[in-house]
Length: 309
Length: 312
Image (cartoon, rainbow over all chains, first blue to last red; front, top):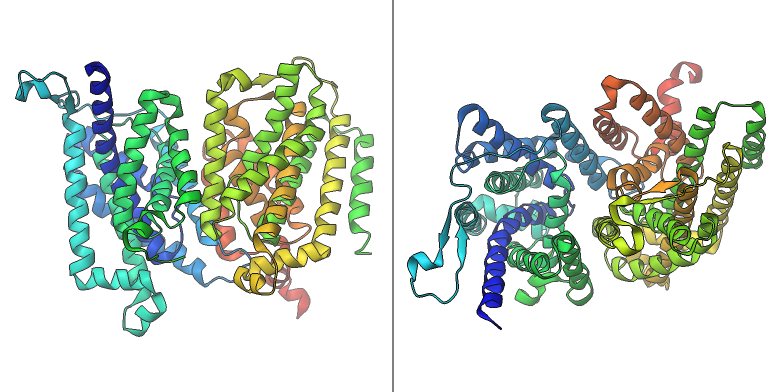
């Protein structure tokens, strides 16, 4: 392998890990909701799109840095998620119907409404927040003059990655050390047993949906300095989150983190060595491979134990 | 009386083109019948067997592309696509079933959704076979008028209706319902669930694929974004069944009449045209909350709601 090839490979891996960190954050939101509710939230990507538009508005109206808008967009999304759970999904849980997937179909309808409303309000133009550090990068040669290869680390990508890691750590602390977090995990493991232990399961569901939406909202704010924003962006991220959820093991947070990074690296390898257009296919190759060879996901490797079904 | 209702509806539809309807009315009728074929096919898998698929666009698109590639690459009439799509889609459905039927409930739904997206991206990128985003166009249409197209899709719909009905009335249908109600219980009674789910997926996929092949012939143009569309095909299919009523014979037909007419109505009003997905989404949410079994399934409930005065 020549040094130029090595350079491309390493650069691809770095890009993949950075992308994977953000994917992990998106995936954790879905896997949390999945664990507690036993349903897949198909409006997940659309919720992220909403957060991105909030960040965009804050930037264009008040020149607020997208990274700071995490503190506004994530709480707003938390409230939106709680409202969705309380007023739309909880009533449907009580409705008797032939198809058990009603709640999932409901979230599809919700996603359609959100994406379409965004198109009406903001038109389908591609938007971005032109921050002045968008093209800044750190170069390996700045630190190590005689380095044989040249690697670069994009400034916004690495900041987004670091914030994603911090948020994930905070979430881990919340879920393992606080009473509320423990109640959420109890609900995820066995909602009836949790109910008997005095956990208000309905409330936990509302909070979890809010938490999941808030996390994906934060991910949206971290993505906006990097990605273009358009109303139909949600769909592909819903799928990414779903692939991570399957890959990581249903309802497992640690699995989702590893799954996110694996997916990011694999996707960036596909994009470099096969072609940009095939990156989404690479994503699903992983998905299908996970279903066939590792049906329990990474979580089953980690603890030989599965949550949920 | 009730036994002969399907035949009476069929006779009525056979005689309908004689009334000299306008081209536009015929177009709407053809669309309604095409959607009811897809709806009935989905209903077999989703309504009776309980395997909700979010990716019926995959089967639709494979059918349409079978037809289109025959025309484009081999120069054979695209109509051969309808019989050929039976084999192609059945093989494809078996592969999909092998992978996706390991999953249950919402996960199966999402896996099929992913299948639809994989196919769209592949069709966009395999330019040698599918012409990519250029799409495939049939340069000479078989007929200028709509009458023959109408009869062909009507024949397909009649076959679908009776096939679904026969399947559901047979032992197979009871197996399907048993799997929907409780897969573990069904398995413990000795029903090989995966086998019967694959059969349901196969029949459902083949019927959808034939509708796709018809679409290629009728519309004369396909591209990956049209035939593998998530919202415009897969989700609309689900809505057709949800609105009409899952696990009922007439539900998909009622649903497709409502959905096609509604779509045309919304699109013809410019102010609403922009918001048609919002309106569809809201309709979906309202149906799920208030009429979870659709119009045909919740008919007694609807009758009570509107006919209170007549009853008391």
